[in-house]
Image 1 (tube, rainbow, N blue to C red):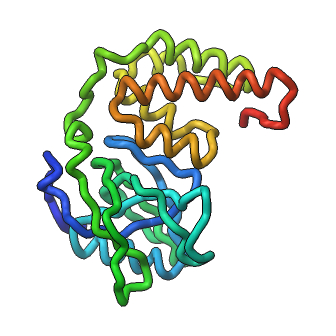
Image 2 (cartoon, rainbow, N blue to C red):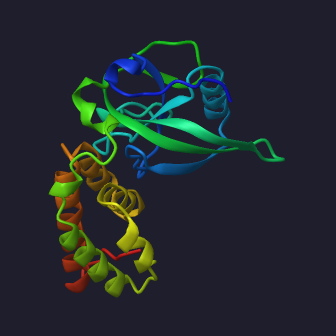
Length: 223
């Protein structure tokens, strides 16, 4: 793969990036997301990214609707990821891994001749995303771990508690957010949280709400 660009601040990032609309998907800075790419337009998107800076913007379609079936209206905030792993399957699919770089705000979608969508974006409001482990000391780690324990007990799933104990706050919070079973609106709220402390607080609150719904006999279940 080409490009050895290092992104240290918003000014290092391009003003235009290809965007991959994916509902229910949450990418956060330094988080890793494996993707199975098979639609021709997104295969073309990956080809173009590999030829340039390897950046792709992951963004959710707006849950309130709008746009068309093939080009739904997008949420205003997404996260740019850099392709760090690439493989091609025997049936032509691309298996890639994106590592989150920073969040961006969409300024406008561009009219292009490419089969994939491209947007003019602004990274300036997310300068802290470029600083690894920024704000870790402000995170209520005990609250995050308690929410996780409550979730695990309710969902009856296994967790690598040794790995949890060893994980830095940023990695812990962001990984739990990315793996969470929440819907589009909830994941967008986690994405748009102003800082790591706030994201942890939103995660705790959403987990408590989901557990309360599950415990009250609601149709909503933990998965």
